[in-house]
Image 1 (cartoon, rainbow, N blue to C red):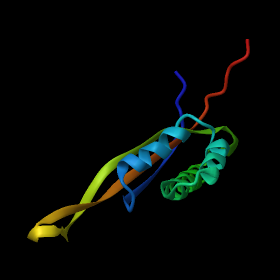
Image 2: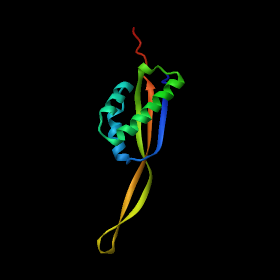
Image 3: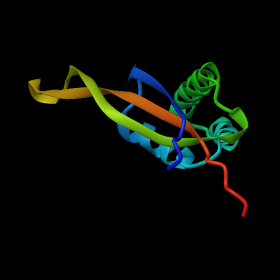
Amino acid sequence: MVETKEAKALLRYARTSPLKARQVLRLIQGKEVGEALYTLRALPKKAAKIVEGVLKSAIANAEQKGLDLDRLYVKTAVADDGPMFRKWLPRAHGRATMLRKRLSHITIVVAEKPEEEED
């Protein structure tokens, strides 16, 4: 059994909703790191810029661990729910509506692709 080496980066309390972050993370999961960075730079979303920073951090962590950067790929990319800011917005007839400002915890794990053995 081949042991896979991996590195992880975690951003807590990101100022984007988990649903919007998951849309971006779905695009990069399973891709090679260079291709994922290229995809994130071309994407016109606020969450793409946030995820790009987390991915760069994961790559830096992999470099610190001594992993081969040419063989890295995005193993898992997850956005979990964070806490929610709740505000009240005044409405007509003396009513109020709750505004929910959602936060998310973004986790990206990059790993080395195992070398294919040639027979």
